[in-house]
Image (cartoon, rainbow, N blue to C red; front, side):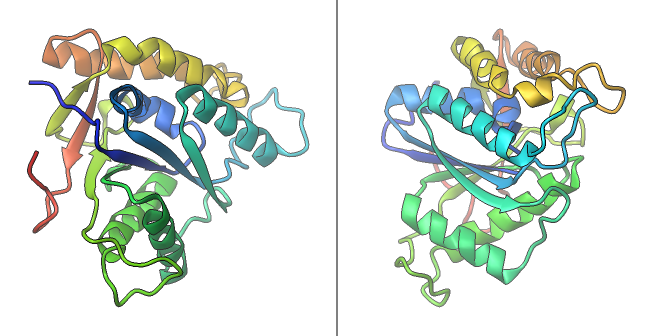
Length: 238
């Protein structure tokens, strides 16, 4: 059985500019190939991900440019929330901003971080993304755009290096999308250059290990793993 995203609108809500490349870009690319509309939301500016070799004055601007270049490779629409790294918190104001974005983009499927992810910004982004999927369909939460007819389905992305205890419900074969994932990740030069720092990890190696591990579990060369949103009326039927 193979998923087809032909009639879908996929929106990845990620914390940092390179998170989509690591966790779900292959699935986004498969959906794009099927004819789906694709969007990526980056919640944080990436302003504090400074490597030992970085000499620029404005890392946030650099990372915005890198994210834009990567989204262009995929053919995705990029949205930026511009929270400073480490300063993304769940509040009604932030939820309402994302609710309005959902109502504008009208996703049928949202991909967000798992609540048990290792990074505090990832966990904050997960909480905000999940709440906004529900309230985007509530007429009582008023924004400029009308409420969605129903909440979008929600998939929770794998955790980095498959740690954190996420037990996937679905694996998406992205064997044909690995080269595109590499090309997108190559846009994030400021972070790739951090690979030799003791407080960081080589991103290209991390990305390949992640999708190869999930592929080995499912009999394909590369896969991305997700968990359904296990909540009343939220899982959906496919």
